Length: 260
Length: 301
Image (cartoon, rainbow over all chains, first blue to last red; front, side, top):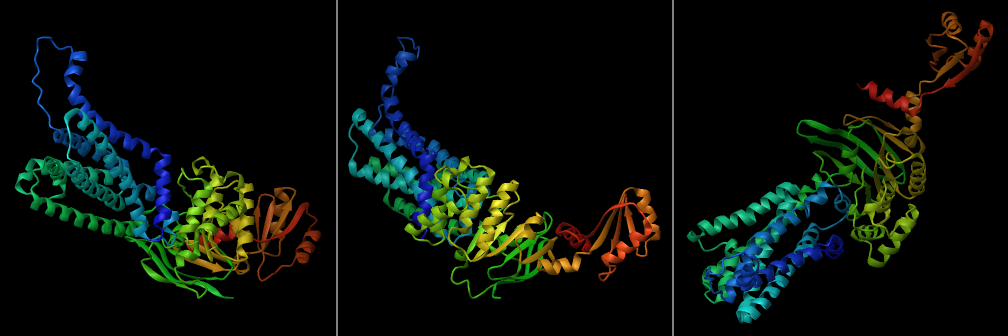
């Protein structure tokens, strides 16, 4: 771990200088505030630009604050996951492929520190951006739809962050294992496609990392089914630890694949 | 002389292909060794294995007592095409790798600055490496390889990509380094090898086909000969007929190979003087390293 801070500094500089530190939070904030705003102002928007006959009557559903927040999570679960997968699938694979990593690998670096530097920067960028986005979201929800329970929101945010940590570890592990292209396909499969399968066929089981966002929503509306939630949380944490260990092992084993 | 590193039976197989086959050699402390061979001979494979980037299929690398602790701390490696994080400046990069090699914060920075001065990148040290030209990248590559003062420097084609001026400068830097560093470098530019080498290793198709000091190799393959240049081909042809030694004609030039240092120059001159042929030049030549290289490679064909 002794190289962690040196390597983290490099990751930090990279993401500051390629503006990921700017655009990733912006995307999350944009989707965070667009949900409550568009739902709230939809009638006005339709009236102004929709070219709707004046005698037509819309029966728009009445949303509760937690529905608005969960609809935002729906966006994050798709667009956010695409950003995580495509934006970071090369986090290890790319530097191995273009040969920049060679000059790190010949040095006495610890691969644990190496993987953790990647984990830390992704955690800050993704979890940080999602939290900022959701805070912006809860602000507008609060103003337009009514109060959200603070304790429930913190529980929700924590649970959703654990899901994001899982997503990050999936991406890092596939980037350690495969080339950038394959890593992004594997990440999309595991984060988006499996999520879809889990929501279609998932009534048959209750314990799965892919159900964490759903449980986060339950925390928010106060209908949490505690036992499957805690088991899902435990399973996710165990899988995260396993993925990190596997990523360290694979990063080290694939040193010989670095372009020399 | 102290042995720094001994390599025994180093072999690397990719499936059935043998990239390196039973290579055995030693590196003495503070010497320069040139690894020569045609493209695809296994030079990069050998260097990568010593740098710890590849695992050998079999064979051992025994490190001498002078290299203690984590051996990676004592190795500097320059890849053939060094690639850098384009968003880091030369100084930031060199400082980072110095720290990764175990230098503490303050030391790392001053050592990085000194190394960049040494390789001639003083003016460019705060520029992003993405803007660097090929020559500057090569210099920065050398800087990152030597910034932590390694005992063993592994250089893959350090000067092949440079123009003649850059090549001269880098060779001079390497000669300076060689006084307190053991250097193993690969090259296919034989003039460079001739200039800075205590030991030559000839690789061909993964096998070490010849090794020794420049002198030993020269003595073995130099194949000294006389080159006699006549004014025209007729004169040359006449000489071949009357020559007391086996002679070969190439246009206006007649070549006589020496055997056990015979004939001597004055014998040749006497024969020529008597012959009354029109000639313009007589010279005793020996094979250049390039010719030796071709001989070594072809001998094992």
